[in-house]
Amino acid sequence: MSRAVRMVLPVVFGILLLAAWEILVHVYAVPEYVLPGPSAVAGALWSDGPELLGALAVTLEVTIAALVLAALTGAAIAFLLAQSPTAERTFFPYAVFLQVTPIVTIAPFVIIWVNNIFIVLLILAWVAAVFPIISNTLLGLKSVDTNLRDLFLLYGASRWQVMTRLLAPSTLPYFLGGLRISGGLALIGTVVAEMVAGTSGTSSGLASRLLEASYRLELARALACFALLSATGFVLYLLLDALSRYLLRHWHESARTAES
Amino acid sequence: MSAVTVTGVGKTFANGTTALVPVTLEIGSGRFVSIVGPSGCGKSTLLRLIAGLTQPTTGTITRPGPLSTGFVFQDATLMPWATVTDNVALPLRLAGMSEGEINQPITEALERVGLSGFALAYPRELSGGMKMRVSIARAIVTGPCLLLMDEPFAALDEFTRFKLNDDLLALWQQNGWTIVFVTHSVREAVFLSERVLVMSPHPGRIIADLPTQLPSSRDAGVRLSHAFADQCADISNRLNEALQQRAAS
Ligand SMILES: Nc1ncnc2c1ncn2[C@@H]1O[C@H](COP(=O)(O)OP(=O)(O)OP(=O)(O)O)[C@@H](O)[C@H]1O
Ligand SMILES: [Mg+2]
Image (cartoon, rainbow over all chains, first blue to last red):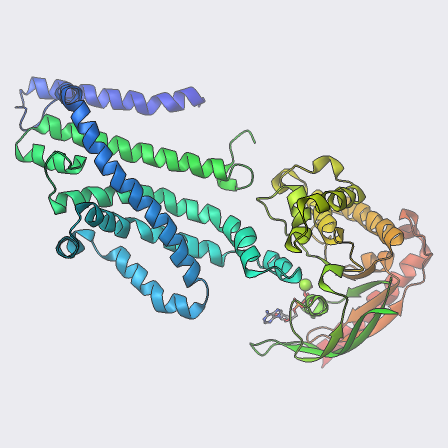
């Protein structure tokens, strides 16, 4: 199958799906507060667009801050855990604990303990996003080629040299794999946190707008929010995937293209 | 003068495996010595002890300083994220040399192994034999006096192995390094070295220490000579005897 056909297929499928949706909504005369057609959603997207994009920026700010924080702290935590098997055995269960706890259940406590809503959202999104980075980076740190380690030992490399010249590059593919997963999780975390924290007003994020619109049965607007959030998640994934490919382009199998 | 002195060196690992019963051995400066023996007999362990990569349980080892020792592993062990140049530069950079100082030795090392045209290639763009050449360039870039090689050509096809054998021999003759070369191929050992150490099956010890008697300026023709075949047969017999004794006991 040619590249063009492969790219076009999902788009054609999407258009067919939207067309079927539009037709069914009209044929059965479904009221707009139950299910608006795609054209109504597009209308809402057009009329409320500027406002919703502003709200998206608020959500994105939290998402990106949480992702960056998760990347930094996750890598640092993994590095500390890798220092000794005892450290890993002692602390890793708590990382797992963090991962399996639904953030909805921690949210009420964080909201009570922290005043600043931005920080509340940040903490919750961080909790959602950090685990894949910790576990992937840890796996990477433990998979470093033992012969290369010996080589560094042979030439009397310092701890710093081992870290920057051996551990960091050989762990990078694993870290980036974690980051790609965490991008989506950070967005999900932010959205869930916004909904639970019940932010409102002009400085609220897109998830809060979605919730408000659904309460008011403005389903076209709610679906417009939904479409924007989904598209954002998708773009975030594409960006992180591109970053990963770019950084690993010379050497890692995962970044191999068909021609090279 | 000896480059390496191993006195009563034994190795028992933390899990209780005795890899090496005490070995005493002296390797003269500028000599090419091969170690042959069945798999698992402790050849790699002995080489790693000489390199200082593991500590002996008993005995002492004297060896040249860290930058005077080059080590070549069985697989090329290159950093996949670094170019050929950066891989070869590693020992120099780790020693804290400036970027200005390292260019000359890198160019020279790459020239010696015949890879001048591939300075900017990444390991995945190279064939197995070329990767091994990079690995050798990295080992010799510091201008070592001792080269430790652990089955460096075992993963290569015969043509490539013969070519690399010839090149290694030529390099050794030009540079006067001391080379300790581990191999499971008796033919390779006899072709390359002046002296062959034969190790017993696990736990390892040295059961024979044989000089080879081939013309010192060897070329590919040596591989076809009777003297070469006789020496190979002699060493193979000793290895088989050792294996049979072990099976009988
Ligand atoms: N780190 C280790 N811990 C425990 N035992 C080890 C370790 N390294 C090697 N051994 C054991 O020591 C013995 C000798 O191993 P070594 O790798 O030196 O053999 P070798 O002669 O190099 O074998 P091969 O030809 O297959 O490479 C083996 O029985 C092996 O299982
Ligand atoms: Mg070995």
